[in-house]
Amino acid sequence: MAGAVAVVILGGTGLYMVFHPAPNPAAEASGEAGHAEGEDGHAEGEEGHAEEAGGEEGVVALTPAQIQAADIAVVAVTGGGGGETRLAGRVEPMVDARAAVAAPVGGRVERVLVAAGQSVRAGQALAVLVSGDAATFRADADAAAASAAAARRAYERERDLEQAGVVARQGVEASHAQALSAEAAARAARARASAAGSPNASGRLNVTSPITGVVTSVQVGPGGFAAQGGVIAEVTNPARGELVFNAPPALAAQVHAGSQVHVQGPNGEFEAVVTGVAADAGEKSGATVIRARSTGASLPPAGSAVSGSVVTGGTAGSLTVPSEAVQTVEGANVVFVRTSEGFRAVPVLVGRQAGDRTEILRGLTGAERIAGANAFLLKAELAKGEAEHGH
Image 1 (cartoon, rainbow, N blue to C red):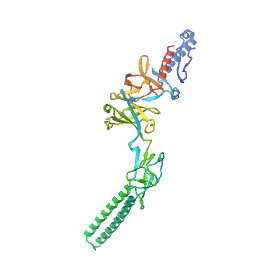
Image 2: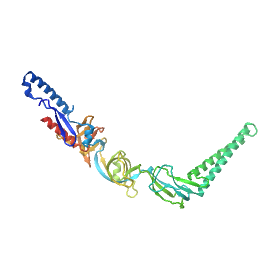
Image 3: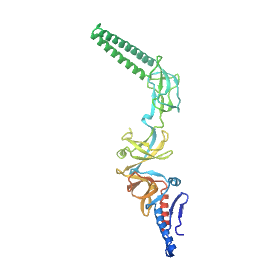
């Protein structure tokens, strides 16, 4: 029937395209009413062509709900291009994310306040020591503070007498110098006591954690003796991890901070970005060490083995997309760029392929978001819409 609306539904995906068939030519020869009816059908046909094209050729109109129902992944275009090098690595805490907490002075372990696996905050006490050396440091600090106070009072008295004309100016200056010297000695004594853990008058002090994290080991027990510099406990912050890869020495000149790394871990695949490259970091092998951080996914636990692939040899400004994002439409390579209405097929010139990524030489700016996984559904829907239009 002229002016009827046909709806094509893509089974199981919730995708659809709406179009109107062209008017029936026989209606134009059937009198004034038929002529009017033909004009209406012609208008509806033009409207149908506009709706079918979505206002632009190569467009598949979809709502966010339909995109989600079809499980079409929308991903960003990333930099890269070139060959692929496979790397072996592991997850390690960052340099500032682990601490081996040592005894500031030698002493007897009075109490252990934590156990392995316990969460602690920065400044929390891990153990209590009793130290004769610490008691001496505290006594020296107290004595130096008393001497400084006495020298300051003596200077103030000399100054008052000098203003009254009782003593000479030279005596006041000597008293001032003695007060300054006593204050300097008091500051040094306080610093020594602070470095010793700020003990009380009995030489009792807390050994505290410098970072927030989880206690991974405790090296002492109550009643034992901790030597100065001996490790009391180890603390690691699991939230501050990084990826460390060992690479051939030649790779140091090809990888730089900002390079993309595709990582395979125990819990699946994720993307990372290089944060540093250290050439000849391996003392024996001379291997290059590459450090990277995840760009979104949570890292596996510290110590987990991972593998990565880094793209090398690309030119500046080159772009890559997931290989499954590149589809062939009417003999041309295209990617489906996300728009406010759905997706638009954009022709691209592809370059080299490394792993599961393909280099894009021309057609994209790098700012687009495109269809990745299940992009073939958009190709199928576009072809179906063109076939229906042909009828």
